[in-house]
Length: 235
Ligand code: BTN
Image (cartoon, rainbow, N blue to C red; front, side, top):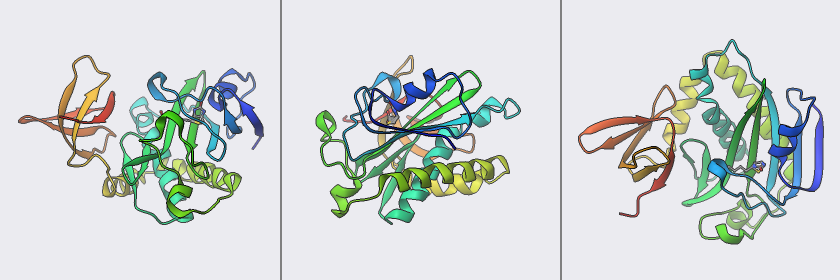
C-alpha cells in the first residue's frame, strides 16, 4: 500500500483523481483540506482533527454495474463496523452512506470513478470540535466522548476492513451486511423529501432493499429510489 500524507491539500479525492499511476490501495491522507468535496458538489468542512482520506479500488469489469450500485453501502458498512469497534455508540446509517450519531452527521463518503479506478473518499469527524457552517448538523467522536483518538490507526482500520468486506461482498455475504445496516437505518419511518431527481417526491422511508435502493411509501404507492438526495422533511 502506498501512502501519501499531506499536512494540507485541496482534496485527497482530487489528488488521487489527478494522479497518473494509480494502484489499488493507494491511500492519501490529509490533516487539513482547503477544498474538501462532498457529494452533489457540496463542500466538506475539513478542519484539523477529522480523519480525511481517500483510497483506490480497481474497477473490476467482471462485476456487473448493478452490483457496483451497492458499493457505497459496503463502504458505509465497513465504516460502521470500524467505528463500533473503536467506540460502541448508537450509530445510525443514513442511506446511501452517511454515518449519524445523535441525529448529526459523523461521517460522509464520496465515491468517484476515474478510468479503471474508483476513488473512495471518506471524512470522519473524530477529534475536531469546530464544524464551521456545518455546526448545527455535524458531530464528532470527541464531542460525544471527550477523548482523543489516533487518526492514522482509524484510517488504516477502515481501509483494511473495507477490502475484507468487499471480498465478502463479492463472495455472497451481501444479505448479512444489508441486515446490519437496516437494523440501524436512520431514515426508517421518517418523512423524507427526495430531491435531486426530476420531480421532487415526499414520503415515508422504509427499508434499504436487496438491490441497494431505498423503499419509500408515497401516498398509496411503494416507490424505490437509487438516486437523489434525501432530506428529512420539514413539512
Ligand atoms: C458527503 O457527505 O457529501 C461526502 C463527504 C466526503 C468527504 C471526504 S474528506 C476526504 C475526501 N476528500 C474530499 O475532498 N472529499 C472526501
